[in-house]
Length: 280
Length: 206
Image (cartoon, rainbow over all chains, first blue to last red; front, side, top):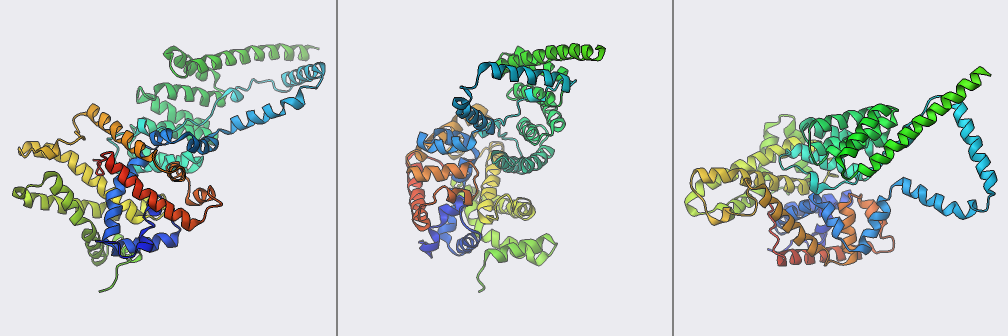
């Protein structure tokens, strides 16, 4: 049977992609209730659209390079943008006399030594956002509720709306406490919000699940969460564990361990200077 | 006869949630009218033999009943996240419930020795590896089809998959006439459907 109103009927793909205004959406849904053809078309195609949403990571990865550029620009982390900004300032910085730069650095270093008696490890922490790869993590045993909450939480996560992501991922976790992916992205969202204790709790719970796919990531991110809250002993322990696994984050963990050790040495030096200052 | 509108259906849902038995009955009747024949068609196309007609009819009724209850209890929770797209969401739920039935039903069929070729489909719940291979194959076919679409359509699909809001997506095409874009997207869907069919995609992926 043909569509009863092709003018409205042609909005079907916009409806499927949620691109209609509220008014258009309502008009189209009214049309669906009256038009058997469009309802059937929508219903039959529904698994295709939800299949695309479910496996978005793979699909996005295979789009044409020209199309992907738009996404990469959007995804680029803030830290990279700052790095680019600094790089663009390099030509202006180069002509400055080296001696002056050196003297300034030393002056700042000494000032820092005397101003801050306690070492601060937080700047060493990496709290970058882990890319979301849906294909790896959707568990087939998830209930409809927790899977939906997870999927909606991840939509917010990808948009950088971490508070909303935390809210939904917490609910998903309550419904399915054994899903490592939920705990992992919940922890990363907490990290983005600067709630390092909560992040660390989520990662520790995740570690207890012993999910081989996530174990290293839990360790790495928990190490950074601990570092951010100045728990260098805990952080070192996590990074050592990552290093021994010799997998994806091993090299970065090794660098991190080196940085912490260096910061500890600097701290000792600073302590020495402080004592001298107290004595004289 | 009064024309059914989405507002009316959602108002009935609201009333039904407040234990209004009449509203609940009417709400279920509307959903039943929309989904029972479709449920029945899927079951019959998968398991149908005239001999078991009564059992399949009963199963179809059960599925629709579970579906109605799910919609009634869950819509409020997901309405905001779904941006109010009720029928779109209801269709996903419906397919999800049929999928659960199909997977669970395999054991039921073995118990009663009602095997036929139509059940030896790709989603065998007991074979995780086979599931994964079939799934990868489906995704490859799907991405193969999407790659053949125009750049604009690929971009819009990509933005949708990136979960950009509709305003953000439209902002990406500031110089495009909205009506022209609508038309192009509609043509894109027709093309995508043809390509998926040509690539042997099984729409009912459960």
